[in-house]
Length: 538
Image (cartoon, rainbow, N blue to C red; front, side):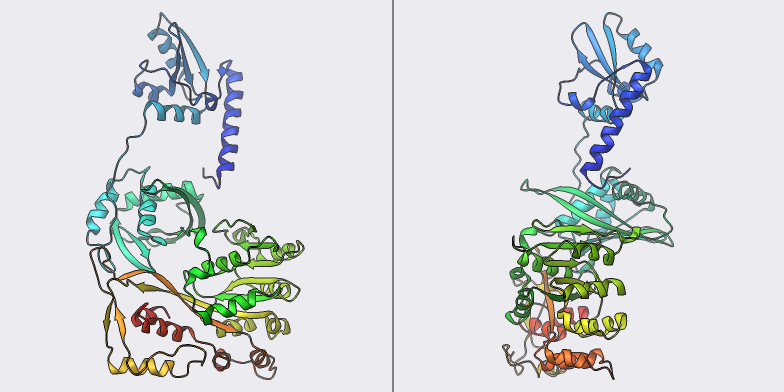
């Protein structure tokens, strides 16, 4: 049994107590709600711990002449007779408690022993120097603790994802740190099955489903400074040849950092965003693959707009972060729900700003565009390789449409690249071929940006230290802003020949757009990242 939230747990407990009370009435046994005495001192030294576990009963009260025991529906009748015979000089009473109540009392009689496991460390690029040591530690972690341990360690290392990958001889655990996967351990299938059971129970998924599944879970994380937080996660599973692979995505974003000022945008990248969102209507599209920072940027825009004067509604599948000051509506697409249907209902609520988690189909696209031209500011994500390609993909989806041309105001394409650690990065002079490649791509930059020195090109590469064996620290965003100018709108209105993404991109560059690759090269020239990282990601 898994619970989506605390409310479900409360309802389940209420039902269990009611069923226990009804069973007690049938058996003519006095019932007591264990929750009402959970903080009352219990009778000690009457029974051995092993007896309590065996007979599913606990001593509750000792008044000197009277002993009161809590029993459950699983307590054998013979055990009641044995208890009376064991204490002939006492008045023995029995009260029915729920199974959950019994488990809570046993945690007081037999509290779990605190076990400390070594922290997971990643000590060189792409792997762990002590993979075997970490694997041995995981094999030793108790089945009840393994999921919590792995998640806690991933959060401590700042991982964005945990990958469990099955193979014939074992199961590989990898963490994604700053966008790159690192091998952590290889464990046995038996240990992985214990982990799967924990995931299945907490995320409400099956360990033997023939199809891909999505689940959600949360875990309380206590940091070394005593600060607590609730970490939300999404679980994706898929059956493979050797078992069920899973990816756990950790949503460990600090809500206080959701500000456009914290995204590392240049003045040229920031200006069109501020200008577009200052208007009461139109559409802003975010494009990029999974893990490219689209959600962070969208939420940062929403927080910029989060004002008591604005009514903001989001449609998300799933709702990944709770944001104060706006109405967030989940869309259960796997259960037949759709963004389009929810969007039509939301438009009747008179919102100022609408965020549509993703445009996936024609119906959602047309409904979102209609909302954007009828007095709403619409923010959404869309799968495309770059900003210009988003236009052509949208045309492929809905055809040449006047509403599309007039409603889309800005398309932002984004990627995340690893940022060099300023303390360890090493400057070097690239060879002539690399220099010429950079000059060729940056020779026609718009006039309104600071030009790099293309005659004396210097680049940087990662250095290493004991504190940072990778040479990277955090990630930075690479942004491409395609502003839909009147000239681009005129290009899109060409009914005789639909413009290709290349034609749209060239026109946008004439209008002053910096491509994503150019933006990446500029950051490499400033020593923020490496040219290898730009080529890897973009």
